[in-house]
Length: 132
Image (cartoon, rainbow, N blue to C red; front, side, top):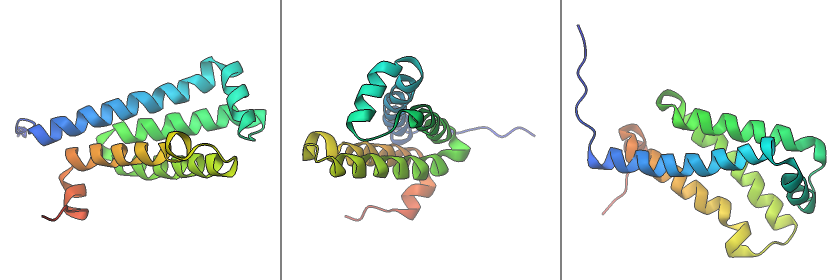
């Protein structure tokens, strides 16, 4: 017996669009660690990160994005990506980077990350309902 899926609703489609855009940005960020090590080294050294952490950070970013974009592991990916972005926020606060463009950038990404998941997954909407 095969199960037929109902057509995607507008909310779910919007959620996949938001999730896809966030996923593309985060995948690009991870790919920089693999393909542009000089740029990454300069940036991360300015934030106080030793060179031997570059590849590890890129790998963690890539794993988080992959988990986020797979429906069965999306919540785990979102939680792990939120933790990773929390570390990025703390790093930017520690070096006293500008508030709105650097320190809060991880917050902006997390809001979009969770918005995409909220729009595409009824279980998340049930867990975090918006009230009128």
